[in-house]
Length: 38
Length: 173
Image: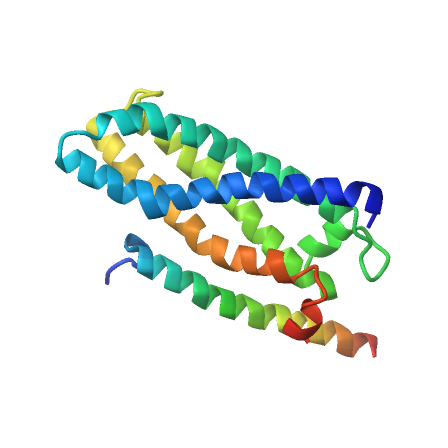
């Protein structure tokens, strides 16, 4: 399997996918902390 | 947050960050392909001799200055529980989690610069002796570390831009 980081487009696409995954995790942490404080 | 120091930390954090990430994008979006074409024409020597060492100097120290001012900025924040903002961010506490994820990404990128990119570039530029086999390995490691940082810069800038602002009310709730 080809390494996506070998191409610029693969690198940028991986960056956007990682952003989406980390945004979801951040959202879970923030909403969990609001629930705990309520 | 202390308004009397916050603005200056933020200002220098952004200035140095542009220097760092701007040069990272120069390497990845411009230089890699330019060197490949110049090498095919037998003209890559001047780029390696005059451009790359100078770019790497501002690149690696830009990374350090960015991190220091970012850390100082976080340290000036008061966490929701009253604790230190730097600790709350790096331990991903509640509302500090988004900027904390950005801070972790920036820290990993800084470690990549000083632990992988710069030591391997020194071999490629002839600053430290290396055999042809060692140079080939160094080229691959430096390339992948640089591409990893380009990939990480995308979420890192997202969290830097959205984490500590009023936008976070919409984006993370």
